[in-house]
Length: 257
Image (cartoon, rainbow, N blue to C red; front, side):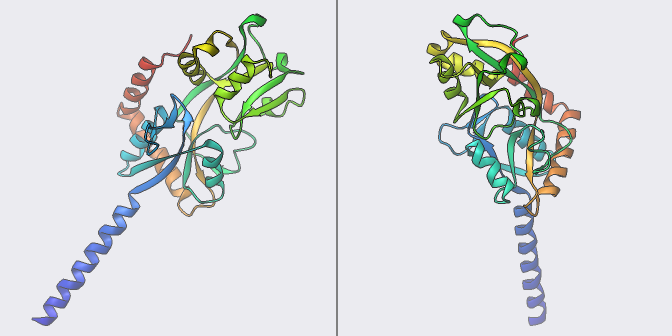
């Protein structure tokens, strides 16, 4: 009788242990940028990340049986924690000369977005190219990833700012000549800050880039979850979930032709 009770206790302990391990293995925390609306930004209570990117991330992992908790953090810290192995992953990043060897990337981009050049309305510039920005002071955002040919062009005088909004403010106040801002983010900022929309506007397009969730090379689970995420992306693209997410997003935030 006692032997039977001991066996039951052992079975109960094993069941609880396995259940606990399974729960831990299927709930992960991913860093998300807190100030990149409408793609990725902190919720009003700063407890979650909202926008296109976190919706794709959660759906892709959910298709593989994994629940994601998205943690809002400033972008520079987001990628720093991943590089140091303190966090599993961070969204969103482009693949360029600076990032390709720092992180583990999945094969399929989450989505594509345009980098747009902004100028002052009264200057009357249009169709501004990389060449036109040479010998000019051009705004960038601290910690953001940009195309290699833009970053490595020594004739462009880069002027970092803490946010894309502060870039546009510097442009409006004539402290820089141009600002490089992600397309829908710039449109979003001009809508909620009409004082800026009266002074600055898009004057060119720098590039169109794929955006990725980067995974840590220093985290023990980085490579594993990069593979799982790629499988998840393929799954939601095949079953229509991805199209439903992106169509809903673009109905709310239409892309300029």
